[in-house]
Image 1 (tube, helix red, strand yellow):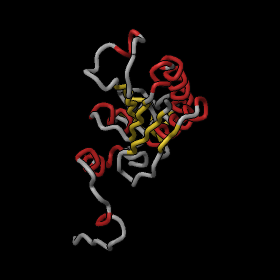
Image 2: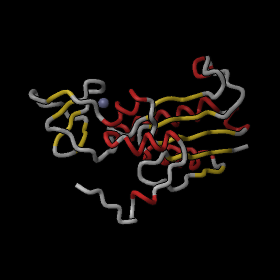
Image 3: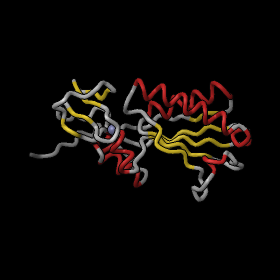
Length: 182
Ligand SMILES: [Zn+2]
């Protein structure tokens, strides 16, 4: 089989960095990747049937197969990143994170593959998320899907104003969003 490159698509997808290249290679992370049916994710118990992952209970004969969201978490390859910065964020960190968690739970319940992976405090990664004693930004939130990355950025902007940058990203590229309020 000869591989054909028509000029639309593959040859025109720039590779900005290593993460991007990994994401391109990682077809199993795509929300529309196909799996044997029925399947159940051993990590989160999401079930796969009729071409989609749901929170419906899995069929008894379902074969274990890690879902794309858990595969991203397992491999440390987020689909979207949202950084939060500015003086306002530092002084309202707790309530902003409460909004993040509430919004995330709602989206995750509707779309099993759209989840928060981690909240990175940027520094040495110690402590801040636990004691609430965060004094400096930025925070970086990582997600398993681009929809949730954008949606949580927009929820923060709607609630607190500030400025959200949520650029379009190419298929397979990591979406990088920024929110700032001083
Ligand atoms: Zn899973």
